[in-house]
Amino acid sequence: MLIGTKAEYIKTAPVMRELDRRGVTYRLVDLGQHSNLPVSFRTQLGVREPDLRLDSQTDAASIGDAVKWAGRLMGHLRSRKHTRNQVFAGLGGVCLVHGDTPSTVIATLMGRRAGIPVAHLESGLRSKSVLHPFPEELTRRAVMRLTSTYFPPNGAAEANLRSRFGGRDIVPTGHNTSFEAVGHVWPGETEVGGPALITVHRVENLHRRARLVDLVTTVERLAQREPVRFLVHQPTENALRGAGLWDRVQASDAIVGPLIPHDEFIKATAAAPWVMTDGGSSQEECAVLGVPTLLWRAATEREEGLGVNVVLTNYDDRLIDEVTADPERYRRPAALPEVTPSSIVVDRLIELS
Image (cartoon, rainbow, N blue to C red; front, top):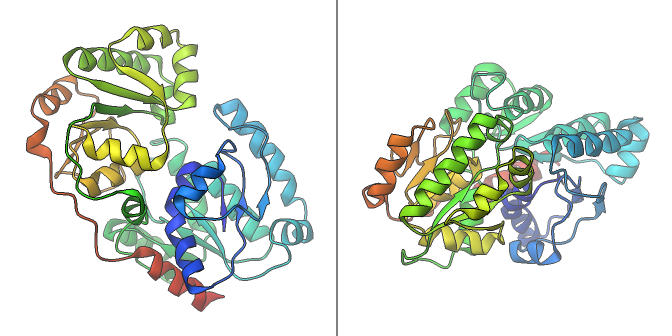
C-alpha cells in the first residue's frame, strides 16, 4: 500500500484495520507528500507506522514544494530492480493506491515500474473536464489507464469505468471508505451548538486572486452574522499571504486557526450549524453526518449528499446567504451505511494476491 497524504491515510485506514483484523500482512509505504503527520494521527486512525518513508523533508504545501518532492521520488523509478527491491522490498502481490493526488500518480508509476498490478481505491470519479478540477482530473485519467483493478465508490463512478474499461476488474464498494472513517471516530449523536466551519484548500480556488478575494469577503460577511471557525490549510494560508489577504482574514470576526485532528474535526462538523468547504472528503463526511453543507465550487464529481444536505454554490453569494440564513431545513439525520467497503476491498485483494 503506497500513500502520501493525510486524506489518503484517513481513507485507507479502514482497509488497513480490516487487513490487520484478518491477519493479512502488507507493506505500508509513505511517500511523504504530507510528511508532518504526528504519531498520534496514526494512533487515532488505528494504523501502524509505515514500513518505509520515501521522503520526509517537508510538506509539499506549495506547487514549488510539490515539484521538488516529486522530483526526489522520481529517482526511485530509475530501474525496475531498484523500485522492486527498495520500494516493495522484493515482494509481489498488489499495489494499492488511493484517490487523485500527486502521490496517487507516483505510487501507480512505482507499482507499474516494479511489475506489480495496481489496484485503485476511490476509482472512477470524473468531472469530464480536463482542467477542472486541476490537477485532480488529469491524475484520475492517468491512473485509470494504468490500473488493473478498480474500486468505484458509487454507481456513477462504476458507470464511468465500465464505459471505458469494461473488460477490466471493476469491483464496486457501494460507498466510499470515508464513511467508515467517520464511524471510527464519531461518538454518535451530537448536539448542534458549535460555530459554523469553513475550510478551503483546492488548487482551483487558491490560484486565482479574484477567487481568494471572494473567499475572504465571504468569510468576513458570514462571521459578522454568527460564530464562524475558519480552519486554514497551510497552502491556503500561503496563497492568502501571497495575495496580501492574510491580514484581512486575521482581522475578521472569524475564529482563525490551523487544521485540527481528524476526530476533533468530525465532532466539530457534527456540531456545526453549517459547513462551507471545497473538499471532496469533507463533502462525503458531511453527507454521512447530515450537516447542512455549502460546497464552495462550480462543480463536483461526487454525488454524496447533493440535493439532500449538500448545496453546490457555484460561488453564488445569494445562495450562500439563503442557506446560512436557515440551515436547519437542509439538515438530515446522521446515518452510517451498513455496507463496509473495506471488507469488499480486502476480499478482492486477498483473491488477487
